[in-house]
Image (cartoon, rainbow, N blue to C red; front, side):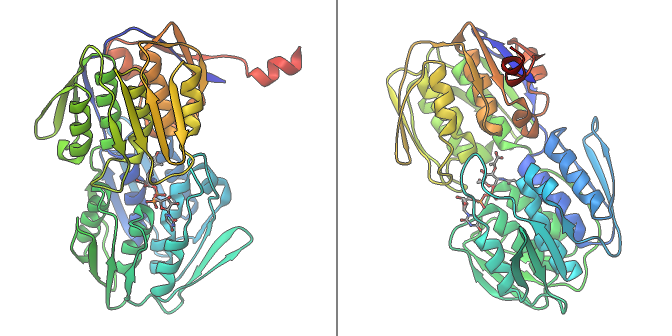
Length: 430
Ligand code: EPU
């Protein structure tokens, strides 16, 4: 079993480069399925989820090469791709569901395993299903798989999402590009990653109006063509570094991200006492001696991102005064709180609110990551804890953070990855 072992006390200083967003690249890779031929995606982060997506596309019959150093994935999509995404891969990465829309639109059928709930909440897929049905597909659940069928192709429709779901917006906009006629999708998500995929689809020959707004109008095309496209910089990874700089009283320049994608985050960090300077594709964050507690509510973009929620709780746990976090997207992100409590954080959860009373120091302890963001936030919390913090569940971190330990070392942290015997084996052996 692998751990990240952090020794607290360092104030981070230097610069980090952020590559493309996990939550964009996976969808761009799925979008290549819409056109026969070779597409390339650049600014691809070297993370495990990309490798899972490579494998998923290979099993659909694509030929995929990945230059991890250059951050380029080239995907050759055959004339007739396979249509089944197996449970084995979907359970490893929920984002696999994003092949449902493109496969149904291009191949007239798709079988994608249901990912099930995960560590941050129940995460329904009803909007993906009902949207595809409105486009004329039949979608049924059979033996744990979504089985979608549209043998005569999809037909444009007026769709209104009950909630601006990121995944449903992506699946439906991809599907609509090959539907006959016009599709209007109202109340769509407006995340920069949605803009990124819409721009890619337009470059592939799709006609989409309203990009970046709550209403997308898509004129279906008979076919699309392959494309070379760049992934938008990862605002969540950049935000994670901004919190790390603020919490450790550090001075960190973060390159490779559009700071306007972090407007609300920057506002909150400034309220916590950080000084933030922005440039075109970078920001510099200088932390205060000790941050001040902040109140944050998570919301769909342009609101405060739920994926930075654990960092807000971690910051508040060592801040002067008290802070509050209201989680409006995922009901079960609180598992992180129990782990942070092992470091001495004082957090009271009441419904979807967490009330945090700042303590002057956390104290290092073994903790376990339950999801990608919780994992990175526990490592950052370890930087402001006295002594040693050992974070297990490192596989979660590797799914979304490229070379986290190396980057932290470059910024002056005392941190290492270590291999230890699995505790269950040790106990059973005794
Ligand atoms: N929802 C439904 N029905 C649906 C779709 C969504 O009820 O058909 C609910 C979900 O249960 C959830 C809320 O809507 O409560 C938000 O879900 P959304 O569909 O917007 O999220 P997602 O597409 O499943 C993506 C990111 C998440 C990020 C959310 C919100 C990817 C691969 N994942 O998930 O990222 O938290 O949007 O911004 O893009 C992460 O990176 O660690 C992560 C969890």
